[in-house]
Structure formats: structure tokens, C-alpha cells
Amino acid sequence: MGHQVGGHAHSVQSPVEIEIAEAVLDGEVSWGDARLSEEAGRWVLLAQFDSEVAADMMWGDAGALYWLIRPEDLAEQRFERAMFTWQCG
Image (cartoon, rainbow, N blue to C red; front, side, top):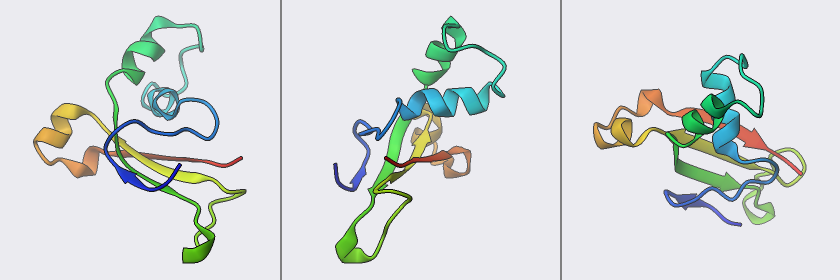
């Protein structure tokens, strides 16, 4: 995996975009609901930081931290609108 800014998230578990969409929609839609997929498609990876023993960073059981943002918010540098999630193995 590794640390990265931008690009595609390397999810430890389920797609992080789905987790963010679920949070944005307040958990009011089921996994099969098209609105969940649509909302997930509106988010891109801003940054990902993986666990790294050499840096003494361990997120749960070798997990990763993720910040996602909508492209329009990134273009306008509205970083306060970024969303955070984390996953571990």
C-alpha cells in the first residue's frame, strides 16, 4: 500500500468511498440503494497514510487513514469539507 496524496485509495476493507457516502447520507440508505453508489462516486482520495512500523505509526491492526474530498471542493481549496475515515485489518 503506502502513503499517498491523490490517486485511488487502497482500501483495507470495503471501498472507503462507500464509507464516506454512508456517513454523508446519515446511514439512511441500504447497501443496494443507487444513491449510495452515486454519492460514493462524488468523492476522490485526498490523502492516505498507512501504518508504518519504522515511523512508529500503527492504525489499529496495520490499518490506514483516509481523507476524501469532492473534486469541486478540492479545486476551490475548501479542505474543511474533506471527510475522514480509517480502516484496519
